[in-house]
Length: 178
Image (tube, rainbow, N blue to C red; front, side, top):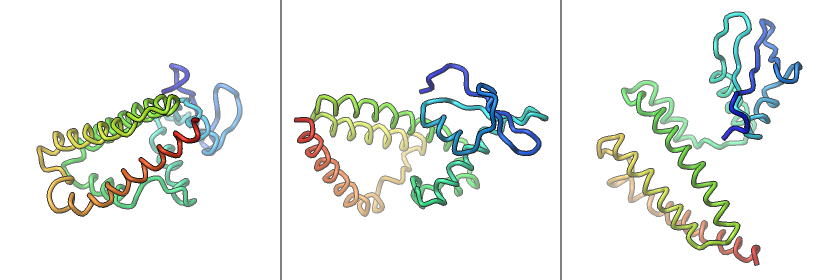
């Protein structure tokens, strides 16, 4: 969610320097990442051509954070992204990722609200989100979801471990809330 309706306009000069049009000063990629963390939407355009370079720079920010050891994207997700560029699933991938992140943001907001009152229903909210994601994947893949069959059985142990760890974290949060 952006705090303002209009994105912060950043202009890239021929020298590749980035110029913040709101504050009339030059900014770095780390500054742009900070704006985004604060909830601002940004738009980066080439001054001469007018081309929108936002996607290119956001990918560069992610790549820099990943290279510094701040890994957020697991190798299998990165591999699947690369694979999606060479398959016919390409058209479904952006919609799937956007929907998944939207669900994640909504669930995260609800999680924070529930933790404020230490609501034990938070785990059920996580399970509901997971069920929604699985249904979406199944719908997008025509029932050929990766989460079915032998591969699912192998991942079931990991899922059980995650659920157990989540339950333990909720207990700790409940103790802190008292």
